[in-house]
Amino acid sequence: MDVIAPEASVTEKAQTYPGRAGVISWIFFDWAAQPYFTLITTFVFAPYFASFVAPDPASGQALWGFATAAAGLMIALMSPVLGAIADASGRRKPWIAGFGALLVIGSCLMWIGEPGNPGIIPPLLLAYSIASVGVEFATVFNNAMMPTLVPPERIGRLSGTGWATGYVGGILSLILVLGFLAANPETGRTLFGLTPLFGLDPATHQGDRITGPLTGIWFVIFVLPMFLLTPDYPAGLPLRPALRQGLTGLKRTLSELPNQKSIAAFLLANMIYTDGLVSLFAFGGIYAAGTFGWNTIQIGTFGIILAIAGTFGAWLGGKLDDSLGPKRVIVGSMLILLLAICAILLVDKDRILFVAVTPPAPGGGLFAAPAERAYLALGCLIGAAGGPLQAASRTLLIHLAPKDRIAQYFGMFALTGKVTSFIGPLLIGVVTAVTQSQKAGMAMLVLFFVAGLALLARVRN
Image (cartoon, rainbow, N blue to C red; front, side, top):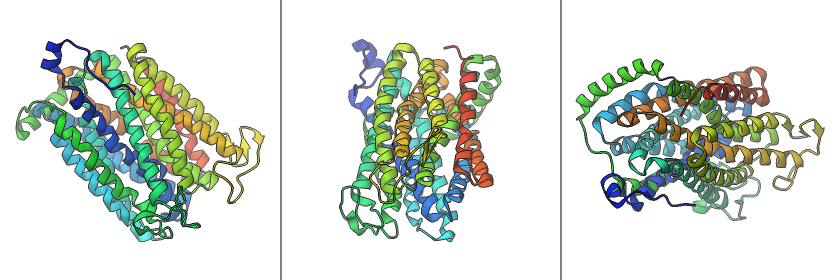
């Protein structure tokens, strides 16, 4: 993996860009935050919630979708306002610290999610929503620091390296959970054949629930280098004047947006395809748990393999971003995702496409059945395409947005990534609840990527 270092003149570097330590420390924000998405929203806690806390997997998928939608609506409403205020006030780190605290608090509270206790579902979903708001807002302000870190021609590699580093952090956090903390309730052993550390009880799924506190502690430890070594924007206005100026600037930006056709088309496309991507990651593990009956170890191993694919995909996507341009990387990634989703909908435990296969045997080997291996291969395609899509999207925004309003536009980027983010989970939740079919719910994702591709064709960068 390349280490990002500016290739500017000594004078330009001294005046504009931080040294290697500051850039690498910024990259580690993705490492610090990624376990939330890897452990909580995708591969461990969400499938655990659907399979063991909720009454049944279909209800669990629906409830998780409703909670994700509620958090997404809050993020959508507040992101542009906070971004505009941050541009006026200058500093980014205080906002990252404040919202990072919400991530830590919400994640740690998720320990309460005991299996078979319906009364714990409302406070558990509230804790999940708080943590989701915290991690997304912290990411808005972290992204807004990018233009000051490297020259424009290296933004793509910086973004791709950040995503790749995040995936590596996700892989290691999954290995830690599966190898040492979460055990199969039937055998009492982890993936490495060990008894869980700290006396975690497999019967009450403490190894699954520990992912909440682990995520919070992980974030605190690994975000510290960014606070200590990465330069912040210089301080601007105090909070109250920044609020007034930020809101005035946001109003002006919104009034100008209809005349900025490329950035308007991109933000609209981002709104739609990000909704599809987030929903795909959020429900991929839940879908696998319901379709194949996978337990935490199987889903987590699946997650490790996907994250490895995502690491290489994001790293390669960053290089292609600088050489081919971010728009081409986004289009290519979405085509791969669309193909993979369509194929997944034609895979069942006893069928691949239209061919009958041997279903998984009870107590069989890891990914031993043909359908499981097909799902694993398609998941690797999704992992390899998802990282470049997200990394290139934030790079394209930097190319399109005015530099003096970058946090504001990243707020709008988060807005368009979240304003309809409740629609994907809500649509999946409603269709799943009405049809009692996880496959019917997941089929809705095809619409998001087709519409995103159509809108992206109107972007000129």
